[in-house]
Length: 55
Image 1 (tube, one colour):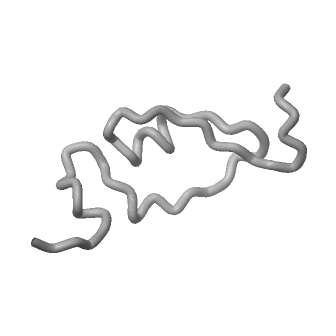
Image 2 (cartoon, rainbow, N blue to C red; image 1 turned 45 degrees about the horizontal axis):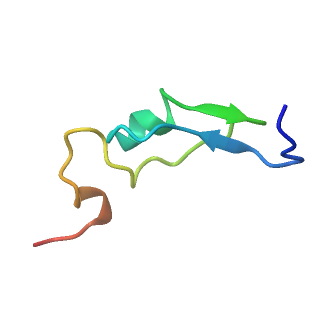
């Protein structure tokens, strides 16, 4: 195992679906922590929607 000491590390891909990348397609090194994915953009969401930006 990697020498991560007490760190819990989330490893995930970058497919464009921020929610699935960090939930379904991820793995944890250490304890699995609960993630707040409210601000992440799911696939097919407008790029600025998760940032609350307006045009």
